[in-house]
Length: 338
Image: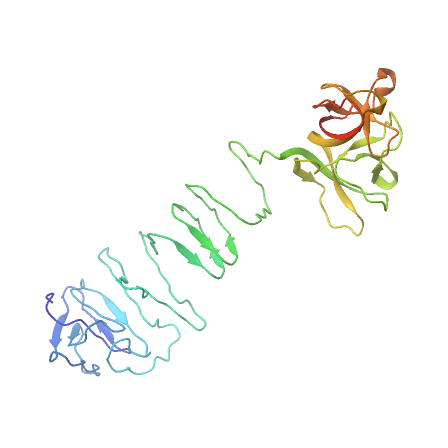
């Protein structure tokens, strides 16, 4: 069929097949007219041509031997008469089979319309299957507004993958580029990392949640000691060996990792156990210099310089990272319980 001939138009409900070993024949119709729907007597391998300006629901032209296309009844896209309704739910609306290595169905458009569009009330809108090649190949972005269920491997995600719904992967998900997640990531299995995990600069401590054993308001940066029932409360005496840590989240630091986070009817807060945290300090008991050991003080929820080594053992919170010559203040502390 030459480039100057009219487009191929096959009305819905038509079955067109070319026998193995032979090429399809062509039955022309007058220019400018819509070809009639072939009846039961239409020969296998027939290709209809007419004066339509674009292909309808299905078309075959210069196809390799063995190609079969089955079309169920639906409104024609451009001319043509609807064929008999399809009563078999297993017969697709459009089916393409290629046995010589090319695509089974190929759709292309130079406008904003869809190259290939599939819709089904209960089955698969588009179903692709390949014995050796790709069942589906996309150059560009893939947008999924519902659920994307993968039973195999998701590989070669070199372009953007935008999922507005849920992404469920029952096999492996391999990404050769960067994976950017703007929301939460829930991992029910093992998370294995081969290189490094890089956290934001403000993620400075490792904390663990504890129940707060008091009804009074507790602020981040407050020094906490162990209370009854594995809960904690603000410190209120010097050199208290029950010191547990400092409430995380004060100043410019935030917890990088929070352990034992769970739902609770009571008030729970993250207590920094390792790392850097901003801590309330009272320097009226002694000026604080960088590197000084800090312990609990008589001031509620505040630390002080550990001036008496004999009392400091077991009551040390950590080391001061910034000086505090006098008064009360919030300074960064390197947590090192000892």
